[in-house]
Image (cartoon, rainbow, N blue to C red):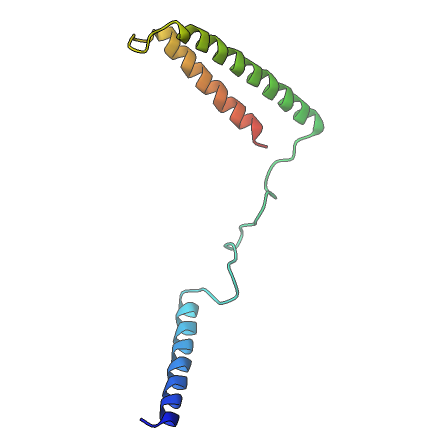
Length: 114
């Protein structure tokens, strides 16, 4: 082929691929221009509930008391487990204490979220 015919072929091939790409994006409902959230959905914490200052203080006090209880329970469990060998079977009391620690941990995590 001659160089001018090759150039014409390349240009027409590029133009055809651009048209085909635009057509498929339009058929899929995606138009060029970036990523946007779905309709009716907003970005950011606009839907989060606003707490009054009194509610925030109560929540902070509950967080501190739960955290203090979690730390003291963990220390008590640690002291209890220091005397037990690894090969021994743990008692039901130790299991229940570990479950209560897990619940307190989840409570502290929930309170830390706003």
